[in-house]
Structure formats: C-alpha cells, structure tokens
Length: 436
Ligand SMILES: Nc1ncnc2c1ncn2[C@@H]1O[C@H](COP(=O)(O)OP(=O)(O)OP(=O)(O)O)[C@@H](O)[C@H]1O
Ligand SMILES: [Mg+2]
Image (cartoon, rainbow, N blue to C red; front, side, top):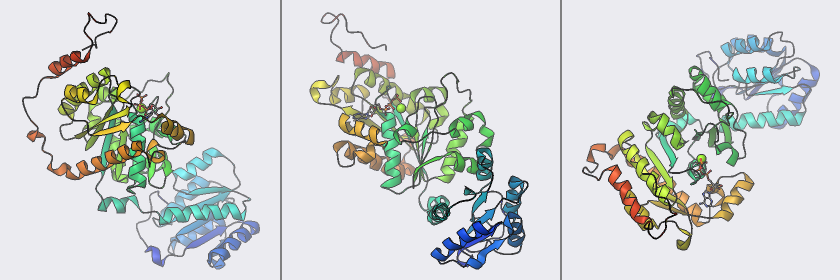
C-alpha cells in the first residue's frame, strides 16, 4: 500500500508471498484454487475479512500481496485506513466487495489499494489481479533507479504551430522509456489542445487539470494516481481542458509538478507550447536541454530567432538543440537549410525529413512516430536527437553560461536580415513582408 504506513519494515524475502482474509466460502474456494496453481499455501487464506486482517497484521509481518474482503465492513474506507496503519510499506493490497460504486473504487485506490474486485469474481479475474500485482512488485523502483541515473529534464518548443513539436516530444519520451529504459514522464502543457495522450491512444484523464486547479494537492501520491501509464517506462500527464475554461494559474502548479516528476522519474519530457513560455517563463529554469523544432519557412526562421534569443536570456543554463522537421524535397522548401541557418546564426543540429506516410501510420495505430518510424530516416533523426539530448545533459555540468560568446548581433538586426530571403517588392507586390 502507498498510504501513511507503520514504520517497521520486514525484508521482502522474509515475507509471505500471499495472505488473504475472506468472508465467504465461494471466495475462499476461488482464491485457494489460484493459490494452489501459484504454489502458495492455502493455509494463508483466513476467514474474517478485513477486520480480522487488521488484527492479524498488527502482530505479524505483512505479506507481499494481501487480499482483503470488505463485504462485512460497514465503513470500508475507514477500515482500509486502519489497515494502512498496520500494514508494512511495499505490500500490494487487492480488495473485494459487493458494492459496485465507482466513487468507492476511486476512494479505495486513492487510499492505496491496488485493485478492487466486485464479488462474486472468477478465478480468471483473480489471476489477472495477481499477475498485475506481481508485475508492479517486480518492476524496477523509480527511486532506486533514480539514484543510479540522475534526473534529466528536457523541453520541446515549436517555433510555429504545427511544426511537429508534440510529435517530437512524444517520440522522445517513448525513446527514453523504451530504448534507454529510463522511467519517463511526458508532461503535455498544451492544456486545452494537447495531443500527447491522443497520439498514444490514451484518455488524458483529469490529472493535469486537477493539479492546475488545486496545486496544494500535488505530491508523490497525487502524481502516482494522476499519471496515465502508456507503457512500462512511460507515463503521461496531460489534459483536454474544456475550451470555454481558461486556465487561471500563477504557474505554481507547473513548478510543483516539475519538482514531483523529478523526484519520481528519471526523465521528464515537457511539451512546451510557445504561449506557455510567454506566460510562465520559469518553466524553463530547471530544464537542462531544450529542443527547438521548426520548419524551413520564413516565419519559422523569424520565430526561431526570437525563441533562441528568449532562451538565451531566460534559460542561459539550458543547452539548445536545433531541430528542423518535416523537411521535404529541396524544390518544395520555402527557404533552404543554408538560408535558415544563416538567419538564425547557428547550425541546425538535427534534420528530420517529412514522411507523411509513416506519420499517418503512427496516428492510425495510436503510437508515437518514434516507435513506428524506427527503421526510417525519420526514426534515425529522432534517435539522434534523443542521443544528443542525453549527451548534452551528461555534459551539462561543464556548461558555463558566462563562457557564451559576447558581442552577438542584436535580435532586431537578425530579424531584419530575414528580409533578404523575400522576393523584392517590385517583383511580387502580393508577397507580404514578415511582421518584424
Ligand atoms: N516528420 C514528419 N513528417 C510528416 N508529418 C509529420 C512529421 N512530424 C510531424 N508530422 C505531422 O504534423 C502534424 C502536426 O504535428 P504536431 O501536432 O506534433 O505539431 P505541433 O507543433 O505540436 O502542433 P501544435 O502547434 O498544434 O501544438 C501531425 O499530423 C504530425 O503527424
Ligand atoms: Mg503540439
């Protein structure tokens, strides 16, 4: 269980693998049949339900997996909290009862139980609950792993709408979780229109909206419940907030979320819409590396210049990796990579080609582009980006913002230089100048 537990701790190896406290014969028989299959002693299936469980566990070591029957409990929530007082940390609790009420289920899960089975349940349902409990028990603990690998926080910002920033963010999160087996959180801060959950074929849930509305509730337990799990090493926190509801926040919720994610996961990937950095500049203060994603367009170059300049002032500690995405054949480009680079006054680090077919395939399958495009040039670009981010974060200790070159041309002079890519007005009167 993960609620406030008694402090004594019995080493996992000395604990019984399973103990049950049941209320009726049918439940007892179902559980005993599964115990036999698992090689567990059926003597550990006791009568007396939750109440007996609380008494027994107050004087004995907790098992690894505990089953409690709530049927005879007049106040299941209160009794579960009493169980929390006597149960040692790390025990996974499966409860069962006759009440089919989603609110009770949510409250029980919030109190730390792993699963709630509606009685009568079949041996298959029980087996499934046990398999899930074992998977959680055997999963590497984030906190243990975090000690080996320091936390890494990367942000992804698109220079313009639709350049593929969210595609890059979800792909990176997937790559860090699967290829590098780092426990990874994807924080999608496009609160109204985010696509992080959608592209992983998940419901976003209310986690992020709840966090923004009640920042005081954000703690480790909140994170555990609010994150939606996409795969073993990837969880996501996102929202599809109603579009008639502005997000009224001073940004403290985002800060606390970043802090909690840092404590719980090895990697945080933040999908950072441009509007968010305008409103909440502190979001980048604790981010080690940022991928700025653009397309090879005039507007993309203009806004890349502005974002790079903003980052230099607001996040001098952050390593910026420049990505151009959706790069089609030369004849289709609005501006060439060379012109883009000369206007932003730096090299592009990563080029990801346009691949409409693979992008559509990923969307249809509800998977990230990084996963579907594995063996394509797009996949190679995304993997190179992930490698680059990991490497820059590892080197981050050496990065001294003061070493950055002085006497760079001003932002306005760079923006003015962009006009040289435009056809002259005499040639094309219709072509609008970029608003600089
Ligand atoms: N390399 C690529 N080749 C082809 N299509 C791509 C590529 N990268 C992204 N896309 C597609 O571009 C579209 C926009 O991508 P995405 O939503 O990631 O952009 P965004 O920058 O996050 O947009 P927004 O400004 O709305 O947040 C999606 O349909 C995505 O599948
Ligand atoms: Mg997006």
